[in-house]
Length: 467
Image 1 (spheres, rainbow, N blue to C red):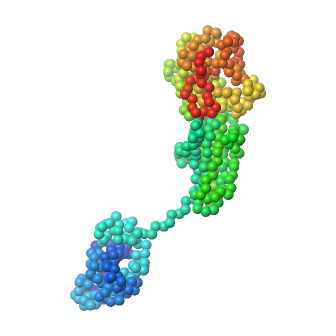
Image 2 (image 1 turned 45 degrees about the horizontal axis):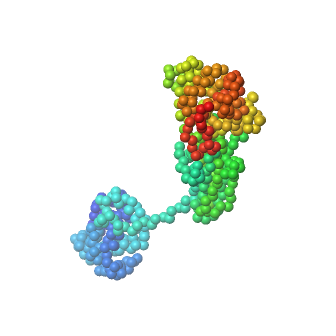
Image 3 (image 1 turned 60 degrees about the vertical axis):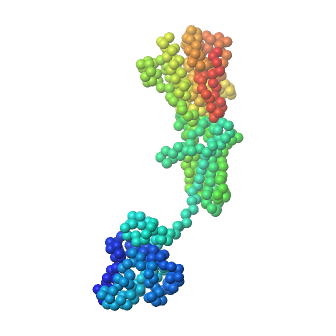
């Protein structure tokens, strides 16, 4: 009797597969739960109605229907419980019925299989050898899916306005997890701030800081920031309160007219809490530096042009469009080949384009105001997009002037005269050329060809022909 009973209990723990003990492999509750689930699903509805459900079986004859004899429970079949193992068939039948009924009742009430369906479903693919059920295991009841947590993360989107007035959602460049947007000086754009929470109200404060040194301005006092679309300056910090959840807030900005970097931060509170940090790169795309002539390697290291005009507030002043840089080199080499002297290239554009201010330099007077030059304002009315360059005219002879004019004109470049107050003389050929060449306040102003762009505000000045 004790030997037979031990075999029954051992068969409960080891089951037919024989290699998953109660405390190893997937676990006893998972194994039993999976097999009972399969066998339970094979019983007819009428047979299930005869079962007492949550309690012990009402009778041995009604509890153990033939369809329940699946492969995973062969150890429990009455035919296997012979009198030779348990002393009598009726004793084995009784013990068998009691054990199986207890397991089924416990499983139905959730005491054995509670939560095991999740673990079983997740491990069935890797333990197919012990799964007693046929097919894909669809007999396992699906695990309850927990409700998704509410996503109340604040959202910020960027929309740019092109030259035709269309609005386009901008995609940032992501570097080391930080978002960067590029836009032209004076470009108009809109940011959309949203809180996806289902209830409550939220507030947001948008703050920004201007970093003009990234645009080649080594002076920062009074640096211009964002403006609204009417041109009015936007404070460095603006807050918007009592916004309804699920609603979006739009804020319209216009970039400053200088090349710079602006770091912008939106701080959300209320139903949505958190902050979003983004960087706006205000720049003319594609500008390249004009390197010193001895570094370009095109003409054997010969110094056929020199770079002049750097100041402490704008130490790098020779950036241009690639076509501009190429044409300057061609003009300079042709001139050097004839006269053996280099041309002196003064201001072109700053590293990111935009307004090229001079500041209160000695003798600098603005032609538009008649006052001393100031930071963040022209006298350079052009020099914004890399298609203009100033070239020293002082000391040239009339013959050199005439030849330089023809070389440039042959390449589609217009040569004008710019006075110290930024007034451009487009009809200077009608004036006394000798007095211009003797003046230290005047210089040549080269306009280079280009396609222009609808995004340029104001539009660039392009050559309209040779004088």
